Length: 482
Image 1 (cartoon, rainbow, N blue to C red):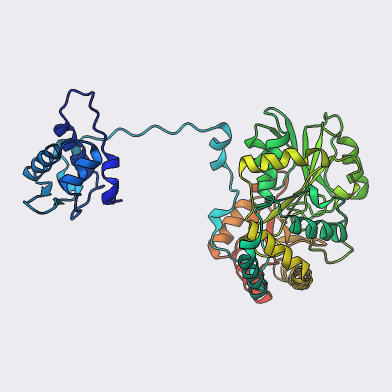
Image 2 (image 1 turned 135 degrees about the vertical axis):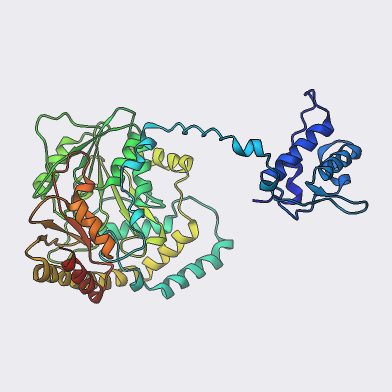
């Protein structure tokens, strides 16, 4: 990009220790700026007086450089007028230089974690734009933006009167503590809650605080890829633990790891519910300060066929469980707010780490959300979204059974925002998912969520973000692809 007049002096380095004279060095550097396109055709240079002052050289040095470049055809310079670049950089490249192949720049040196990033399809950026039946989303079109906008405006108006205060706004933490205790059975005070830019940020913060390179971490397999990514970034050895009908299995004979990540209330991606006995078993396995459990309750607000199952964290009486949640599923993804309920012994450490890493959510948005919750808008929106998502789940299940029952077997989840449909014949779920994406229906292959050799095959289908007419159209497209 062309540079502004005030920046030109900053791009010139007149090393006075060299053998070349100042005029020759200035001429060469100006010539390079023109040849590279930084000073494009028609660019007006600073006056010789100003450039000389900015560079700390005599005016004659600048004048001679301008005259030399004018003689070479780079500049148009006349008495009483500022010099103007007369050519595009490419026009002045020497033919011999242009014919000489340029050496390729070396590949940047990456960390072991970063070098593996291209080997995973998470996040699903390659699937953009957002289309049915992409999993992991709720319907942002149903969000009460007018009410939310009023909360934001009132918060913005009152910002000048508010003290800066803590990064985790007490009003939101208190409202969230009350909501989680009432609706999810979480046992925690407001002082244990950290407000973060996302649930993924919470995992990053946990990993930074408790993982030492080489520590072992267990995650569900298949499971949420973002968890493995966060823990690997801290140098952990991530081990995938298989699933049964209750979610993550307890494998006999394995020594307890440093950390266990799980989604017990609605296993991602299968939607399976972990029983009370299994939860108790994992809690007994954990030890304060030795083995931690991270409970990701990513869509715990959505239950349809039975009473909501209380969070695993509510069973913990020894401070062994981190509880992670997000507002992006219940509200709208662009709100960019998640939260972490921390064990009491780690609250102060995590708050310091939060500031050092910079995982801080905007205070005005936190204050607006506190008002949104306090005024009852959050619960009202949740009740409406539960009804809509319940109906959409049933519509998708019925359509799959009618139109694709001969090729797909549906697992009907008791809650959540997505479901699994298993292929009855063959295991090429990634090829099927690719074919559907090309046809305009976005799904996700279950095998792509595996850490190692896939144990599970099928399609992950979202329903909460899509109206029944959109689901029906997607089903017709799917039927034509099999």
